[in-house]
Amino acid sequence: MTMPPPRPVDPMTHARIRLLIKARDMWIAGNPDLNERWERAQQQVQSTDDAVLYAGLEEISSVLREAVEAVGGVRR
Image (cartoon, rainbow, N blue to C red):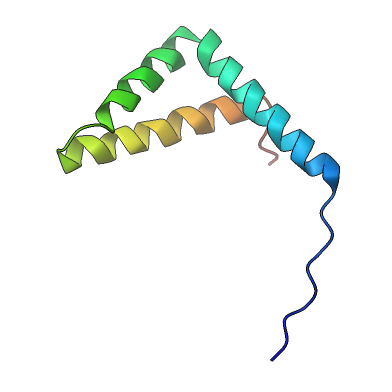
């Protein structure tokens, strides 16, 4: 069975992704609540306790999701 040829990638897609990442990071840094949660979660993922580690990962996902939605990166 042969694989279909890869779809061409729009070069602007990469630029948009980089801009979204930068905007997300700036939003987190500029929002005291999100920044505090981000820093706390970063510390939690260094834990050897699995429950603390997974709680940190969940919090990181939550902060990232909120920041991406705030900067308009999610279309619904």
